[in-house]
Image 1: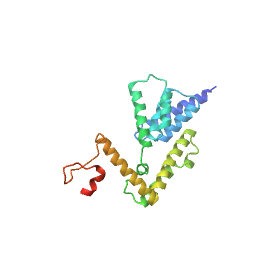
Image 2: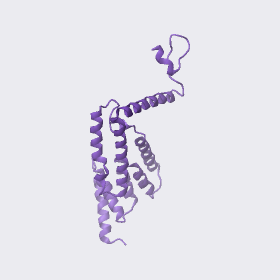
Image 3: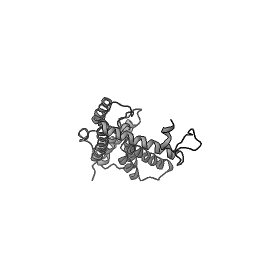
Image 4: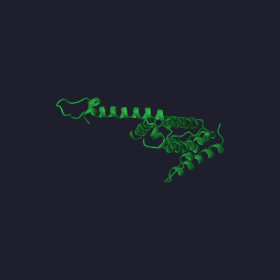
Length: 204
């Protein structure tokens, strides 16, 4: 059974989180932690989950955000369903990110730039920096860290990066094929017959 003191503390935590959330540049992690502490103390109103979920989205922790939204026991309005839809779209976008995008780099990035970006992101995502946070946050940052490590391992190795760039090139050509409605790109060669995309180089 919750004591009056625990309820008061939980309410204060939520009020502080709401106040921080109203600022232009809210400390998203502090808001998430305040809401989490309030929930641990038994304050489980829908506003707490919605507030935490919205700031989890800003932190790129989409699985946990969706769980919070699904916990909300309010009428599923069109606006509410749109929040869930947008969150799922952002989650897919993150999952589909290529190694360069994960590190925040262009495909032309140098090895030095790759290593620097990896170090910067490691400082943000490394599991050791989040041991004091709730378990669901530890797991989320560990997953992010794994993606960063994997991107770095592929891109700093010359052969792996060469193979990966080749995969990206093929994917780009396939995407172009899909955009053209399933028709391969071709150009008119010196003869009358259109040439298959794989043959076009001999006419350039």
